[in-house]
Each structure stands twice: as C-alpha cells, then as structure tokens.
Length: 493
Image (cartoon, rainbow, N blue to C red; front, side, top):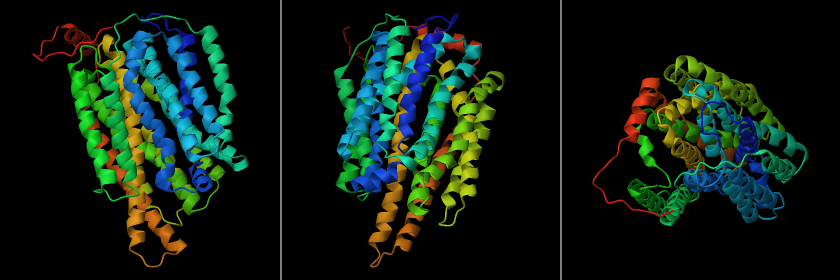
C-alpha cells in the first residue's frame, strides 16, 4: 500500500476500484428483482428485504475488523481473500433454489466485499496530498454511489429477459478475471503496524448489530412493543453500548471511536448516516411502488433510475473538484435541501402518479446527493491525523453499511407495519383497497426518510472547511500522550 503522498500506486488504485465497483454493484443489484424473488419464493415484503439487509448487516459486522486487516496484512492478500469469498457467495446465490440458500450466498458475498471500501478509501487518502483529496475522493464516491445506482438499471434490463439468477451468474467470470489480475499485478507491500484481534469485541459487535437489525426488520410483521421486536432492539442497543465502551478502553481497539473527537469527522458521520437512511431505502421503495402497485416492468423500473445513476456517476468526481475549490458547507446545504424536499415529494405518490413525475424527482434527488457525499466525507477524513486514517475509513464504511441497513429495515418495517395494521382492521379487503393502503405506507416511509435527510441538513450548517493549520494542529494533538486515568485492556500481538 502506498505510504507517501508523492507517487500514487495506480495499479493498486485501479484494481481496488474495479473490485469495489463490483462489490457495491451487488449491494443494490437485486432491488428491482425483489418483487420477482418475493413471488418465486412466496414470501412477504418484510421477509424479502433480507436480501438487502442481510448483506448490509454482515458488512456492518465485518467492517469493524478492517482496521486490523489493513494493518496486519498486505493490500494484495486482503484483495485476493475478499474477492475469493465474494466469488464463493456469488456462486452460491446464483445457483440457489431456496430463499435461505440465497440469503447465505448474500452473507458470504458481504463477508468478502465489506473490506474493499475501507481499503480503497484508506489507499486514496494515503496516496494523495490534502489539497487533491477532494478529487481522489470523487473517485471513491463514483464507486460508492454510482455502482449501487446503476445496479437497478442493469438488473432491470436483465430481468426483463432472464431469470434473476443470471444477475449472479454473469458476475462469476468478471470476478475470476479480477482475481487473476490482482494476483499478477498487485504489489505485496505491508504497513507493519501493530494489529490485534479482540475476540470479545467481535462477538459483541456481531450480537449487537445483528440483534438491533433483526428487531427493526421484525417490526413489519409484529407490533413494535412485542417481544419479537422490542426484545432484540433492547439487546442490540445494550450490547453495542458495552462494545463501544470496550473499544474506548483497548490500547489497540478494533474500531477506534476516538476519531469522533475530531469535530468535522463527527459532523460528517452524522450527515452521512442520516442521508443514507433515506437514500438506500428509496432504492427499494421505488421499485416496490412501480412493480407491485403500478405493475410496471423491471425494465421500466431500471430505466427510471438510469438518469439519476448517470448523474451520480458523472458528477461525483466534479463535486470533488468543487470541494477542493470551495469547501463543504455551501455544497452540503444546497444538496441536502434538494434531497430533503424531493424525498418529501416522493411521499405524495398516488396510484396515478406519472412516470415522468417520479423520474424528475429521482433525478433532482440524485443531483442533490452528489453535492453532499464527496465534500462531507473528504472534509471529515482531512480532519484526522494520518495515523488515524485506517480507523476513520473503517468507521466511515461501517456507518455507511449499518445506517443503510437500519434505514432499509426501519422504513420497510414502517411501510409493512402500516399496511398490516390497517388491513387487519377491515372485514373485507379488495385489491384496490390493499393497493391504496400500501401506497399510504410507502408515502409514510418516504416522509420519515425526509426527516432523516432534514437532520443531515441541519447538521450541515455547522460544517467548516478543514485547513492545513487544522491538520497540523490535529496531528500535534494526536501525538501527545494521553492518560485518562482508566485501566486499559491490553492485548498482545
């Protein structure tokens, strides 16, 4: 991995971008296919969302270990191991004949792919000087947001002609090619930094995030205060609390939450988490509305998302250059205003809502997000001393996955819970009545998503650009020994 800012290793960057692009493409590849999968396996909407949330959940569990992996192993070994696991999961999902088999494949996929994004972010941060990081992180945003955005369009075209299994099978030869390229071309360079694996932290992370997400998903089929919903949520919150406390006491934590002492990084995390909760859920709610309610084809659904995907892809690098020139605050405020308003407009759907209306709103929403993600993320990473960039990139990737998974689980559960509650009150349910109640549930979910976006907008007013003086001050602050009087939990290499 490149350790200086003088000469970026373009071989490493290009191969990592290619692998991460495929990994993030699979994150939303199945969104358009969810109605087909639901019908094939005869399951509910709240159950089929596990195709997406199981992937994000496993990624959220694995990502806390990525700082350890990046310090312990070379980028080449990490890449080959990650892509190997991703290939196994893709193959299993591609040949799946039962829903549990599909979920198992998705979880193995996530195990392999989850480390690629923090590895790519850390490589870009270390490869470019601060004055060029906006442009570099524009490339990162291109992967992070363009790949998931183009996924529904590509899958819509494929599902129109083929079975959804083809979505997985077509990736197998590409993954094999990437594995061969990585084995031949990647340098085998190690950072040689101290790294430890804290087993109790791994167990706590798995139980905490797993229980929290399971409880949120269960809310769609059960009452919020039922034991099936409330119990796992409480367990998850309690275990996550003790997990964070343990990390604060470890000499070498799995996730270094001390990075949140840097204010711009903390604000960037809040903005990203709040917007992700509304953004990723919309990628599932729109296909459900178009296919289940308006009975449009997967191809039409994919084509509706194509212009927004192109905007995310083409303008993400541009937003990085704009950040280098103007800083994050103005861009984030404009972008989040557009994203909040358009998400609220998506909460006003009717059975007769036109294709052009949804398309226009979706395009403006995508444009707004291009002004937010790269500037906020780059500014936050600039606030961290160099030695903390692996920890910052790991936490950034984890919060993206966890907030996306929580957003999907929460908003889909809100929609499904609203539908179930209102249908259970009726003696007679016709298809027209069920469709109308489902539309109301989708609108409610979008309005809650707009609230999340609004939280990000309010936070954006407190942003300020991290200057070179700030970086030097933070580096000096980080180098000082800290004695907080607490007993440390020591781990050996």
